[in-house]
Length: 553
Ligand code: ISL
Image (cartoon, rainbow, N blue to C red):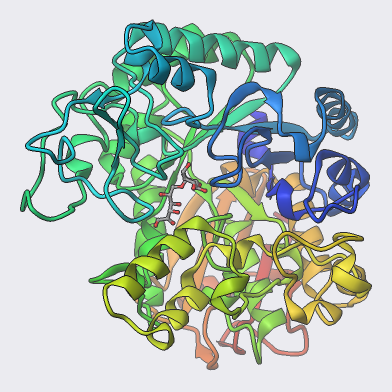
């Protein structure tokens, strides 16, 4: 029994949640002003994206001081008030931990750059060039080479993300100890855990060899994903820091299979509690990768992925369940139908994450069914979008060819400001928002959503409350039903305290159910049904979601 297994996480991207000053950027006081809202929704864990000092090349994922607050977001006093306010309401706080890289404006990097003899030089990957070129041919996640030249020392430094995000060298023990000490200080301040950014990229092959065709930029993942010392580092972090606190940890892990997942979260391993496996986030990626978006994806494949992880970690480790985060498109636009069935499909998706084994994560705005946007290129702020666009234009693509991908998969879809009401800028700011508000805010906003009977917001609130009350939905045995169906997500959760049946149609068409006769004869009592006028044991309406409980159980 652990609070992080029973909890429901709400992710806040502070830059876009609520602006209390009118400068167009969300801030900590903005969150403080919304604490009662969070309590009303019923969530009991908040994950904050980075709020540390940062020049904001990548919206806080480029940290210049791990122990100071970003000026735009407020002060340490504001942070302490926020933490106290959350705790008063029984809500835990987990922070983002970004230690694969920091900012090129962090004191470690500045000192090491200015003085090659400084001990901080080895906190990063500084290397000589090869034949007047970068040390290897790795491509950065954000386009272009993963190396930046420094004329003063005639060396290059490694940055797997932007050139303002130099990678930290975990081979250096002093660096590791500095990170652990920083983590302890946050725990001593009272935070309850960490979400660890790209944590399975920290162990790099120090030889940093080129891959594939040395004359082309290539993805060097085999030399830095799930690297040789990954588990040694995680176990050291556990020993030095995590084991001393009643905390929660979740690692963001691209490119991890179930076997590697078990090594990261196995209960006996003393590494992490949970990871975000990202397999289902790649369902609509084509052979050309993320930007090669494939509009049709298979429900069956989606179920296969989630079931493989549930079974793979069953009894040894813990899952996380989510449809989106700040790097992904809006869930209802990607996995649901944000037009004709926006309400129903948002509800259907919620019914899946909130009843599966594993801790559910809700991204801000999901509870009102916020949707993707289709902006002009100048209106986007994300460096991943802009770098990719510029690179493609430079290599001859047309804007018309690129924009559909940006509209479907670009990260700013998730980052448009939270839509609170129908006042100007959706009540997010009195000023000019840093990123344009979704034009549909007069229709889709919290004030309106809370009033809508049978709407998305009350559905989330009720599901959250159900999951908190019925521990069967947390710990109960999981039977996946109708696995061959390419429409329906169906399962049963049961233990000595209860027996629940969950049936969800994830399509625009009516779905015929094919449940075992024995099962259909049991005395099921509907607990939640987003289309109550429809019967449900034989067929489901488009995006119908039903949670039923065995009578008298
Ligand atoms: O979606 C992606 C794959 O193309 C990336 O944006 C992916 O999310 C990224 O590789 C890992 O994400 C994390 O680290 C990044 C930061 O920009 C993201 O916001 C963060 O979640 C660098 O710190």
